[in-house]
Image (tube, rainbow, N blue to C red; front, side, top):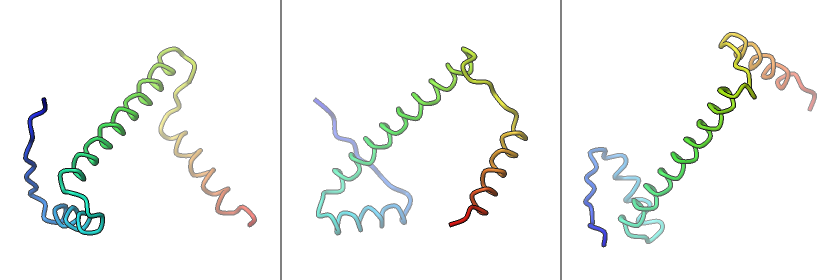
Length: 87
């Protein structure tokens, strides 16, 4: 079976957040920590899959890279267009 692990937090603000959530939700601290860690690893795995797909797209030639300056120009143009869009 699984061995239990102790978690020691050196961040008083984080500990305060956990204490607040324990009070507000009525859940045990270990349940909250377990859910948070599970969600963290699920998100990490999802991001890794996205990065792997994008790398594969670049490597296969399905997507062509653009340089940073061009990406910045496109982003600024898009932002400017949205700011000046009639409501």
